[in-house]
Length: 163
Length: 115
Image (cartoon, rainbow over the protein chains, first blue to last red):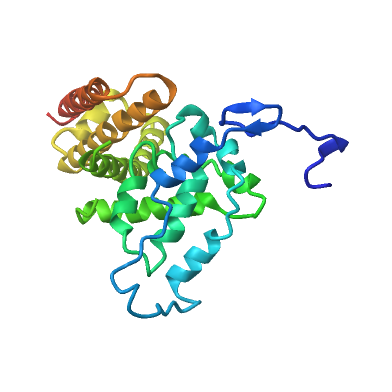
């Protein structure tokens, strides 16, 4: 309790940046639509049906995916993000964090499409690195770092003409 | 947003980051120079005597103005898109016009120091 109850008081409120249905219940449809827009689903690569993929646990990609994979989809980061409140189209920290785990999934076959989906002013480049997502994540994830990774990956892809 | 414009948005974002890196150096050099000139008590004529014909200062401030002209319009465009309903082609044209304005008047000022 000490971590959440400053001066023995807590405020209970519905998640910010989402339409309120009633009391504390919000409509999370838009939140998960953003996961779909960010290509947050796994797309099997060409060799997926023929053999098991070997992913060394200490490889750079696996460690980057590990750092972001434990998201529980609670929406707290999306509620904490000021950029979402300014631009409701912004994909937000959770969807971008999910996209980053898949960009680092060596079995995935849709890297360039996903990077194109998360680029632009409603995607990773809108992030101001304010780190509210990181501060409020109940799983202690760092979506800001995931978004920074997407910024680097999209810049390289844009320079190579892949997006 | 189409694929092509996402690529352009990404490249513009890269240009703004790269110009920020250039500005970090240029602003530091500029401020040190200003403090040096003021503390040394240089007059306007003495400053002009140092900058006239100096290719080094011409190139330095030419690069400085170019970095400003890339950085500032992109940043203002982003702020306007976040804080106002203005977006789209008219905003892009306005940002490009602002960039041309900065280059034209910035280089004109440098021309006055050099020539």
